[in-house]
Image (tube, rainbow, N blue to C red; front, top):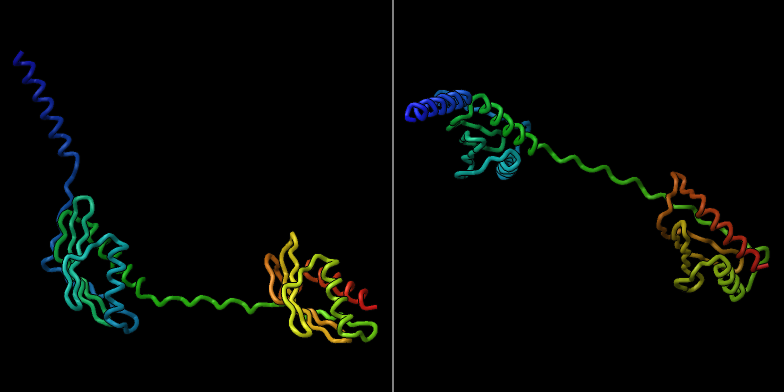
Length: 237
């Protein structure tokens, strides 16, 4: 009985030793004689901007600040049992990164510090200004010239009839002009119609779900304008 237990214990011990030997420990990095890394900035920055870039880079790469003084941040990275600590001294034209500790980091030390340096550089790149939007292109005014001069009262009645015939709604009226809106399944459009005794001018104001090309043209809008002009002219004969 005891012999069997002894043999089982020996097998377990061998398995445990074998398992322990299968995982190779990652070595520490000796930083006692390591030269600091100097990140020269391509242009002068305010120290506050450099600090903000360092903090942003640390957050991106998983570093945390352990201590901070003016122009100096001590940062730590903990990753899968490894601990790295660096001292970042910054000014308006550079960031100096000095390694303080690299336990269990091995070859990853250079990669992690290099990634931090790259993220600092990226955070300090000037923001690219968005391209200004192209100027809005609107349709040219549409004219409805009467065949004969009209009385002002007759023009107003003719416009109201024309709008009603094509499902336009009059939104407001002031003097010799009015604002009308058309709600269509293909979009909405709003225009201002200015008139006198000889003609009416239809000016585009705004729209929804209508796209105009570089010349301010849209097939639906132009059809609506033709229909409106024909009705205005017909009601002023």
